[in-house]
Length: 419
Image (cartoon, rainbow, N blue to C red; front, side):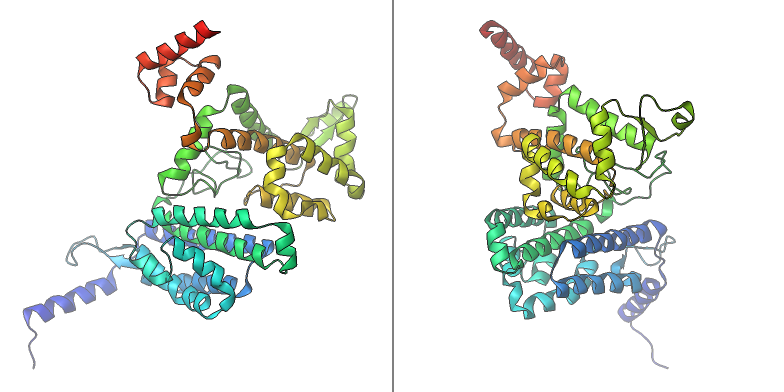
């Protein structure tokens, strides 16, 4: 009988305990959320249009994670401890991700643009970039900025001339960024208590977009890094009270009336008004226009929608320009193109009343995003003056701008004298 050394015994014991450790429910929840959110994201981008091999690679990654949950975890603590559990490990997940995606990106010459932009963010070669990263969040910000720079070079004429390859490349990059962001945010995934929302409607803490029920922010602002969230919070604090009331009223109405409210004219009978989803239309022209939109007469109302968007909603018009919404041959496809441009992944409502209101609040948010999104462009003095004009107290202004009370009083007094 051979005897083991103390070192060999310790290794054997650790291997035994590692093999018998359990994956706790909280860790399983994180992994299942990664699988679910990634699967939903791929489905969304499949509809938008991305490289097929790229999509298949990510789907294979999801399936691999689902089939081998233990491999995504790592044992922690001393093996002799009573609490015998495993925890989520992002590097293990990154290894599985690279196993499926790196060969596809390396072997296909058509992915040279993707490699170039990943390299700018320090993420290519993929395995080196992900496993040696000290701050994946910072790299994701650089990656996002590189995608934005690439998007600015994209034009409809170029994409049409090259068979939409440029647009597909852009969407594939966006998908890769979102999948990596989901993995990076996994530690924030926590089971939520049952919420009171009747329809399961959840909105981003800051902007107009819908969010996943397991997160506090939308897909744009859910980055673990403070940059995106901080930017969104800065914009939210600058929203005037009227805009905030408009956002809250819309959300309350959605929950009360549902996704398909029943149109009610002022002279309708009491029996018709008993419908809990009834919505009283006080603008008769709007009433008939909405009705025309959701009937077979879509092609008649199409130009009216397009003209209204382009003449009244310049910021919305700019962000939806690349979606070719004008070419939509049906109302559902038109709405889908609008939501794609607004990066509204979780929204699927088709009712014209809600689509109109979503466009209006999106325009409001995009206006303030353009004005205050970049902190470097924000004039502190102007911000203090605007907050004062909105009726904010000096203490509230101090919380927002982070300046001393003396400085704030001086700016307010100077502004009063100048006026």
